[in-house]
Image 1 (cartoon, helix red, strand yellow):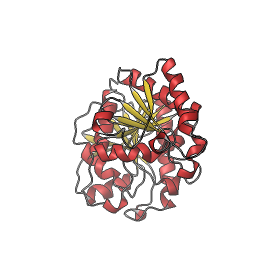
Image 2 (cartoon, helix red, strand yellow):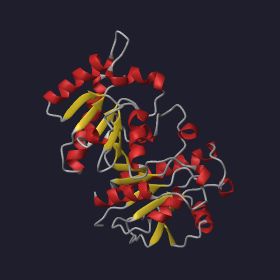
Image 3 (tube, helix red, strand yellow):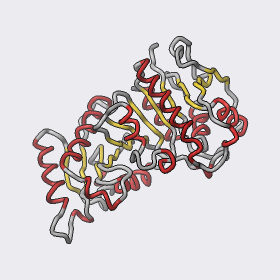
Image 4 (cartoon, one colour):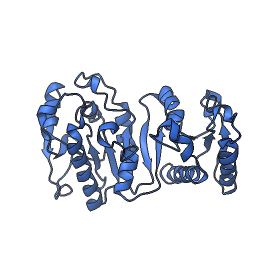
Length: 320
């Protein structure tokens, strides 16, 4: 097969994902898509949204023997009780979502596939305290210890050193090793997939990179780490103040802004580019991307959701 398939897990059943998935299929791509989801749920959503397309049901053991086409919806059916469709998000769907991921991981390993997208899930009900997010969940399933969450836009990307961590715990996780690990993963990804050595701005932890405390993480940890990275031929600068780095004349100088915690960099990137960004997990043996938004259950069935982030995710994988 010239173009390897893109494996897609629909994720939370009571979300907008299938709606934006249908809209995304209107774009022409070369890589065939294999959807892992409930066939019953798919049909219900198609009826509700008045979407028509031929459905081809696939078997786990023969997916690469068939000639896959995006003129159809190619699906591996995962059991899910349709009576729970169009409800509020609860833990009733946990088994279904877990089974969907298990099937996807088996397919990726068995057929050596390298393109994976997952729809949004509710971290509170599915992952609970076991994982900080899907990035960590997928990494553990592939025995990957070093990973990074890159919110990618071709003009500017961001990466948090800590991911879905309560603010009160952030300072405990800011250290030399973590910062170096993220910079190396970003540098490797940009050189390998985008054919360029990235320029990275590293943010400070404290407002204006200053602290009234005797111990200042920006001076004691971040600044020496940046000096080390510079000496080892990484294009990094900082620490920069988070309140000014995203100004137009500042951000234009960088490919990636590395922040110390989740909302320090995700809030501004979403403000700047809204749906024109994708979440890429760095460090995996394959490309894993998710649209940069949540389940948004309040918009379920309204046919008003913006598919741009998923379109960008599929397009990125189609080219790689």
